[in-house]
Each structure stands twice: as structure tokens, then as C-alpha cells.
Image 1 (cartoon, rainbow, N blue to C red):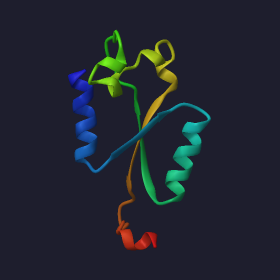
Image 2: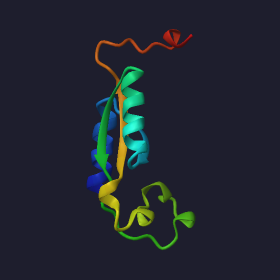
Image 3: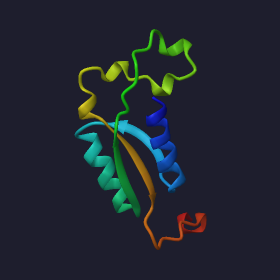
Image 4: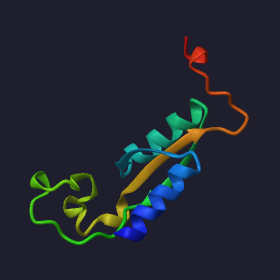
Length: 94
């Protein structure tokens, strides 16, 4: 799990922001929407983590993958960042 956390930390240090986990057809829809609104998109496979006993009682509930057991390869973590050359200022939104 430390290796996977390091991977996420590396992506964040490169300016990527974690959005959410999705599979098809929502995955393609989200990627298209982010690209249309001026973002670069990076898809990361789900990290391999050990089983958890009870996510709700643990502090690492966001790291639990028990719900994806057996279908992990169908899901991706969506990361986005502004396209290179975009200013990305909040004033552009108004």
C-alpha cells in the first residue's frame, strides 16, 4: 500500500487532482466532460490493498477496495489538471 500511496503523492506533486473512481460507461463520460472543459485527464488503476475488516471503523476507509473485489480491473481512478497553457484563474469561471 505504501507504493500505491507514493504513486498518488507523485501524481499530486505533478499537479494532478484525484476526482473519483469509475467504470464504464461513466468513466468515458467523465473523461470526455473533463477534456471538453479544458482539463488533462489521467486514469490510474486501483491500487492493490489488503482486505479490510470494517471500513467504517477504520481511518483508511478511502483506501478500502473490498467493494471492487474481483472486478478491480474494470475501475480507474480519475485524476485531472488544467491543460498546459491554461491560466485556470477563478475569474475565467465568472
